[in-house]
Length: 320
Picture (cartoon, rainbow, N blue to C red):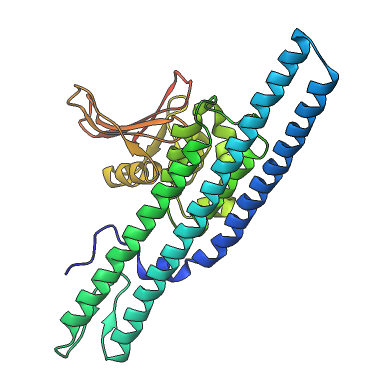
């Protein structure tokens, strides 16, 4: 049995701490408790208002409080679902992780060498058996990881049904709960920063980009490619030099163009290249920045085109 191609490397799995995510689940549960308390206060106000205010205006006010009470109850229930999704996902991930690491320890105690990509090397006949066991546990870890991601995403999505797709305080603690879920998924190693950012943009809309970016810890960006225009500028400043015209940038060789493109699009999402035969690849970053690699019509070499959100100016990266 071969190790899955999408398997996280051994050192990454060793660094995961799914147990810490239970703290985040507890925070979400605390948010639900706060909402529950607020719902009870709204209900008491509704009863008091009904006794003190008669007539059409009183009926309207009581009706409004009734809708607020129902909304608070619904949000409380949804937060409880999110709390369970985070807690259960972390537990399943922890079980799968420990089982995998135990299988590695058994293989190494039996004289095998387990590489960072989970492949097993052994001079004896026991290598194939240990490799099959480890591969099965790696797949179980991936399955647990994907299941946790789906459950948390579904629970987060339920919180926004019927609401505008951006961060607004329509329900107490809603933005906080989403931020807690983001932190939980990152802590458990569930998603890459790019995949998380795209999921949040898809859920809340591009107008919420600043809030989405703030919800992702700075430490999570350290070894990742850019997810927005500011990150693109950092890469261009590090890997290229000013070109001869305007905002354009230049590099030494075709290999450098490819290196810059790969760095720029590491956290991007591939999009269609349209009908143009000159466009080799095209990506979009979570904040809407567009990046494409194309064949230059004059030199025949490769050129990177970058268009920032709501921008009309194209930044080109080419060989000097």
